[in-house]
Structures are given as C-alpha cells and as structure tokens.
Length: 213
Ligand code: AMP
Image (spheres, rainbow, N blue to C red):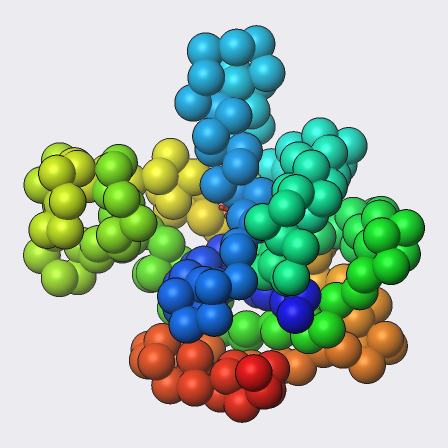
C-alpha cells in the first residue's frame, strides 16, 4: 500500500501519517523530517538547508528526490510507504512517477487534506515540537517554548519556519507550486479530497475507509 498525503503546511498530513504508522505499520517518508535531520549536521549542506528552510522556500528537487529514492528502495518500504511532503511541485511529481515506474510500483491513494488558510496559520504558529520525541504541543493548551515535554524527557521548541511571516510565505509557495499537482493526480484518478477539521480521529476514520485495509 503506497499512500501520498497532499496539503498545505499544518493541514494534518504529519498527524495522519503517524496514525497510519501506528495502525498499519506502514513507514512514513517525510521529506521535511529527512531535511531537518540533514540540517542538524554542521556540514556545508546542513547550513545551506537551514537558510532555505528558514525562509520557507523549496530545497533543490534533485537533493529531495535522492533522499526519497534511497528511502523507497530501502527494505523497510518493501511492503509500502506513506509520502508526506513530497512531491511538492509538478517536476517532483513527474520524477516520482518515473522512479516508481522503474521499480514497478505506483501510488495507490493520493489524499489531499484541504483546510482554510486562517486555520493553517493558527495551527502552525501555535504548534510546538519536542526535541526528543514525536510529541506535538500547542500554545493554545497553555504550553510554551522551553517547557518540558509531557511524554519524554525532551524540551518543547518552535520550528523556525512556523513563525507567522514564514508560514504565510509557505502558504503562497504551496498555492503557486504544489496546487498544480492536485490536478495532475486528479487526472490519474487516484486523488481523494478530504476536508480537514479539528478532530484528527474523525479524519483518520475516513482515511481508513478510503484505503480499505
Ligand atoms: P515540511 O516539514 O514538510 O513542512 O517541510 C519543511 C521544509 O522543508 C519546507 O518548507 C521546505 O523548505 C523543505 N521541503 C520539504 N519537502 C520538500 C520538497 N519535497 N521539496 C522541496 N523542499 C522541501
């Protein structure tokens, strides 16, 4: 089962991917996570990525594609994978098609989660991550940067690109670059549009019915 999540930053792709991982054990390939790992190193590439990502701009297609192809070819993705954050433009979508064709694989479901801009901005600017585990905190729940994580021993922090100005830029980039992919997958007949709300479990239930496993 190969699944692709599409949607603007903060739409819930990451949360839904994690629910599917727990439910079905399908591994997630998040290009944002892979790039953040790379960014954490003090290498020249790490510094370059930090600069690009802090502005909410896209990283070079070739680099992202090479990270994704390594993952898809790995043994852990043998029985399926969830793509989160890739492809993000038409050129990446076409490259993914070529890559999957070569491996006699295809995407079974493209799930587009649609959420209004104002909700996305509120979610991204309010979200806090843990530097140790997968916990996602929220300023609306009274949590703050620097608080201890309630799950593990980590500390909560805000992603550099979750500052309001950058989030607005990321939304513009999404409309400009990523929106055209929706049509691309609609024409292939693999796309389902879902309306994202405030209840991740409800959305997860709808997704389970669609993917039917
Ligand atoms: P995300 O965690 O998916 O919101 O991604 C965070 C940032 O990583 C994005 O704003 C981009 O700078 C970069 N990024 C993630 N995925 C891609 C991609 N497929 N192509 C180009 N840049 C990406």
